[in-house]
Amino acid sequence: MHRLWLIFAQTVTVALALLFVVGTLKPEWLPPFGQPPAVVAFKEAPPAPGNEAPMPGSYREAARAALPSVVHIYTTQTVRQQRNPLFDDPIFRHFFGERPEGEAPKNAGLGSGVIVSPNGYILTNYHVIEGADDIQISLNDGSTHKARVIGSDPESDLAVLQIKADKLPAITFDQGDRVSVGDVVLAIGNPFGVGQTVTMGIVSALGRSHLGINTFENFIQTDAAINPGNSGGALVDIKGNLVGVNTAIYSRTGGNQGIGFAIPAGSARNIMEQIIEHGSVTRGWIGVETQEISPELAESFGLPDTDGALIAGVMRGGPAEAAGIRPGDVLLAVGGKPVRDPQAMLDLIAALRPDERVKFGLRRDQNRVEVEVKIGKRPAMRRARE
Image 1 (cartoon, rainbow, N blue to C red):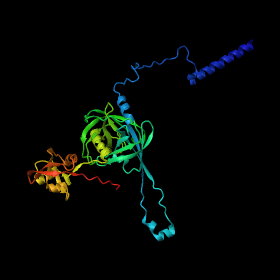
Image 2 (cartoon, helix red, strand yellow; image 1 turned 90 degrees about the horizontal axis):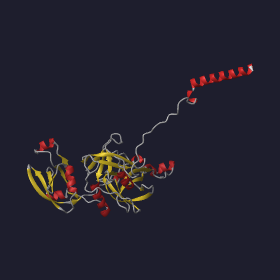
Image 3 (spheres, rainbow, N blue to C red; image 1 turned 30 degrees about the vertical axis):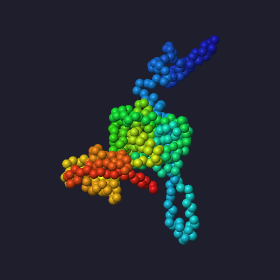
Image 4 (cartoon, rainbow, N blue to C red; image 1 turned 180 degrees about the vertical axis):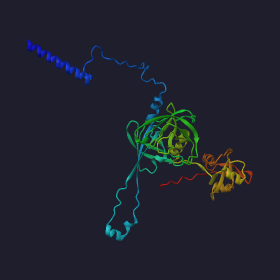
């Protein structure tokens, strides 16, 4: 009996020692004593009155309306390598043999576009498809289609493509360019090729020009994030209506810094309709070179202010020369509309129809004169690759 008691006592002692060691070094191994398990209470939002009800401050309806109309554009371009003249030299060929041309490498590019009609017309930037040998369009549903170029306008950086498809989800255009500074806008596109992306910001400014991006500039400025790959994508309002075509960013690093530019939807639509109907854009032209009037120039020429555009050169045989416009004249008005600077003059003349006769107001030798000019057709911009 004594021996059994001794064994029991030793067992209890060892168990208590083990319990002490475990409780000291690994207390999480022991079950809790004397207290119920803790219950964490989470605070949940009340259920929405229906799955389709938008949350306050949400732009899901605008995104839902516009997303299917924005496409991804993938292009490839063959790099044409020039043959080295040494390859034609008989001595070189004797020692080194014939050098085959081989397959030229291809550059790949990406951008975005906007479906503007159910029968396959797509609006994008010219620089997205410039020089491309093959253009592939990826739709929101994942399908891919080969596109052909209907026409382009390098001076406004717009192009129209078409794919063989119908019943496509065309975007709705904003009527009358009603967008204002401070309005919330969404930028939709394919930045860096990561996939369709929506960013939000406001309209920062309207009528931005003198940026050196395009010949004709009248940009919407926005702080909605626009990055490489967004070009040609949609800038929409809070109802999902197209207000602009994303075109460029101002950046010192190549990434978004809160200054993006979009071509207004009204201007893009007008150019697009001309391209679809005629294959190109027709603009007025008079054949002059102009210069902005600086305060120093105004003082040198004895001008009262810096308004207008200084005629620096007149093309021989052009409409301006035929009308009697001379270098040194200051253009003040076109068809009764004031000219503030060379950019404004360019826009006013471009909006005129070829063969139309229009009164031009000039300052010549301190005198105001008026001449009638028969407007010509602006020559097509010569592409850098041609």
